[in-house]
Image 1: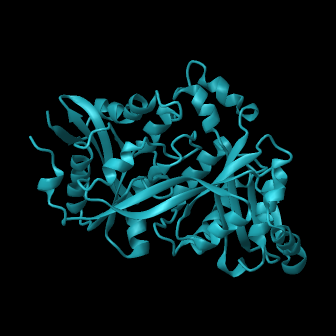
Image 2: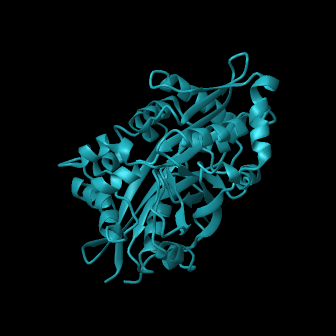
Image 3: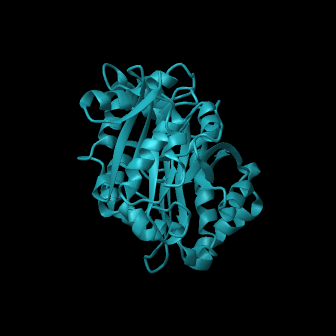
Length: 388
């Protein structure tokens, strides 16, 4: 039987869309199931701030009535306005190990995007590069951290076998740092960190729950300054920041959320590092009930690792050593918290400065994700659609 692809249009369709990865990966021994309730909220037009500046359509692939794959097609007006382009994206990619599934999924996403004036498609990303992004191509044996996708090797194989019509766009790197092991750090890092306050007057402080929303505006200020020229950059709207703050409250730990301020109060740098709640979610198996809530409440005694999700410095302060100050603060926190190691990223493979900094910290690349691209309207749909 051929593969057919149809839009998600009913509650039953949405349920199958959400539950497909649980069926595909539950026996992997590595994949961590997200909370099903959280996935439904994330996909909701009512609750996800993405839909205030973008639109999306979900699709399911079926063979003989059985769901064998899924994909989304989406566009982000904020991304398009910032970059001055008409790109669209695809995401939420999941599929069985069958070469006939991916081409029609991509064809459906392409047709939807073409009908909305898009001329290029990149992905996967859920829904933007600020969410889970990329197909895993290295690190299959490592348990993913919070907001890291995990895929078996056949995802890359089918994306690159030629029939999908995809080309590589960019690789995203995750660096492992043993943040309790100070001996691996180059001495110059400590020297730069010691000079930040006496030479430049820049002081480091920790965020608090009370100040978190206000500090997220500081985060956006740094993010927009330091990252706006990066490939795939997608700006945060006020509603995005409101929603992101609510997410962060669930994982907030004052040891790991940091702001560096200049003498005049200007934000120089921000670091948001999150204790890896995937270690708790693995025990919850995607559900709050009947006992998932108990594991979540006890998360402080479970988590021994962190994900450095964001560490950015405004361009005018990049000569001050404030990044080194934040690196050293992470090592200091590892000596006084249960979290002794972590991963930094993702970092674009083209971001030479950040990747060199990770090497100076004694880090190593342990995961790699790949973003693909495709020019729309140039791949004959007859070669992408399945044979009947």
